[in-house]
Image 1 (cartoon, rainbow, N blue to C red):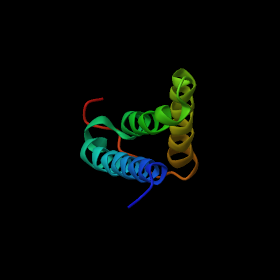
Image 2 (cartoon, rainbow, N blue to C red):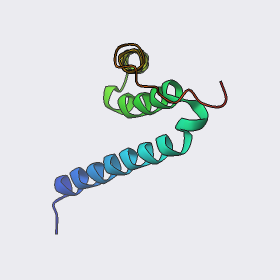
Image 3 (cartoon, rainbow, N blue to C red):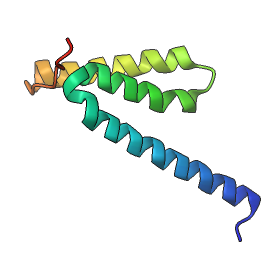
Image 4 (cartoon, one colour):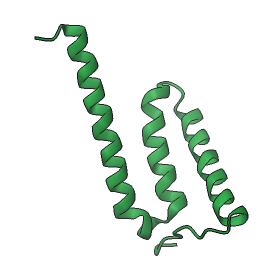
Length: 88
């Protein structure tokens, strides 16, 4: 069998994989309703917060800044329309 440390690493890897799969499913399900900015911000915050621990505000601000930058790149520079969402 696996040692305790190897087992813990394996469980963390499985959990990380499950979180990423859930994020992709969430994005597919909600991007047309919530729009790119809201959906992507929620996903990036959800993925960053566990890794930054006590720096949740920093993770949230970094996520929003990253999504805003990506949105600007695609919409203003590359002229690629991104979903705006049906709620807004």
